[in-house]
Picture 1 (cartoon, helix red, strand yellow):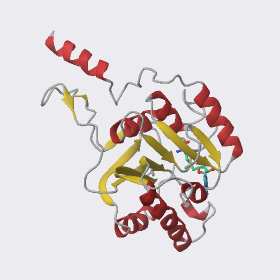
Picture 2 (cartoon, protein in one colour):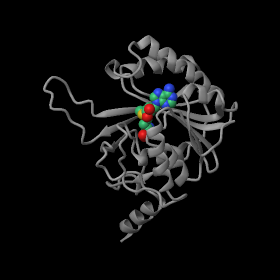
Picture 3 (cartoon, helix red, strand yellow):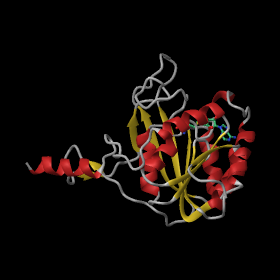
Length: 255
Ligand SMILES: C[S@@+](CC[C@H](N)C(=O)[O-])C[C@H]1O[C@@H](n2cnc3c(N)ncnc32)[C@H](O)[C@@H]1O
C-alpha cells in the first residue's frame, strides 16, 4: 500500500496497481482529454484501451459502496461511458460544469463552455450524503437539491484560487464531491492530481488521499497549495452552501 496524504510521482496505472483491493471510497479521474489529438494519444482506440486498463484497477480498489468520477467531454467521453457500463460500473449522475465566462470568438460553432463529471458507483448501493443548497425562490422551502448543472467560472492563473496549471478544477466542486461520496476518515484516490485540488478538498474535510502525477513541477505546486490549507477549515460557500448558510437563509425567511 502507498503512503497516504501524499502526491506520488508515478504513472497513474502503476500507482493504482500498488493499492489494496476494496480499500478506497472515491476515485477521481481527470485524465488528459485527448482533445484534437494534442495530448499523448493520437487515436481514439489507443485512448480507450489505456482508460480501460486503469478503469479495471479502479473497480478492484473501490469498496463495494464506493464512487468513481470520470471527467471529460463528448465525443471521447461517450466512448468511455459505454466501456464503463460494460465493465460493470453503475451509472449514477452526469454533472455539467457550466463555465459561465467561457466563450469563443468563433461564429461557426457554439462555445464549448462546459465539462462533464460522469459519476459511477461500484454497486447499486453507495455512500451518498445529501447536501442541499439554499432555495432562492422559496419554492418547496428554503433548501433545494443542488441539481446537475453546476455553475462556476474557469480557474485561470488570475483567479483567486488559480495556479499555473492549465486545467485546474474549482475547489468548490471537489469539496462537494468529497463530502457527498465519502465519510470522514475515508480514503480518496486522485489519479491525475494536477494542481492538487482533490488533495486540498480532502485535507479540509479530514479525508485521507493518495494522489498520482507525472509532472514534478505540478507536484511542487500542489504541495505548496496543500501546505497553505488548514485541516478542516471553514468550508467554501457560494453556490454550494454550508450548514451555516442554510441556517442564515432560514433565519432570513422567518423575519
Ligand atoms: C486534466 S489534468 C488534472 C487537473 C486537476 N484535476 C486539477 O484540478 O488541477 C491531468 C493531469 O494528469 C497528469 N498526467 C498525465 N498523464 C499521467 C499519467 N499517466 N499518470 C499520472 N498523471 C498523469 C498531467 O500532468 C496533468 O497534470
